[in-house]
Amino acid sequence: MDQLTLFGLFAVTAMLITYALEDRSPWYVLAFAGACVMASTYGFLQGAWPFGVVEAIWAGVAVFRWRKRVA
Image (cartoon, rainbow, N blue to C red; front, top):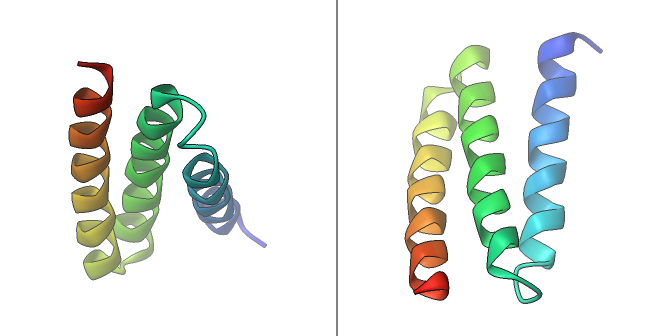
C-alpha cells in the first residue's frame, strides 16, 4: 500500500468517524468538512477528478452546516 492510498484511507475513515459524531458537537461538523477536503485532495492526486469535485462540494456543504449550527 503506497502513501497516497494510506492518505485516502485516512481521509475516508476520518469522514466516517466525524460524520457519525456530528450530533455531539458542531466541531465534528467542521472536522467532517476538513476530512472532505482531504478526500477531495486524494481524489485529485489519484486522478479521479469527479470524486475530488464531489468531495469539495461536500466540504462546502459541511462548512455551511457548521456555520448554521454555531450561529
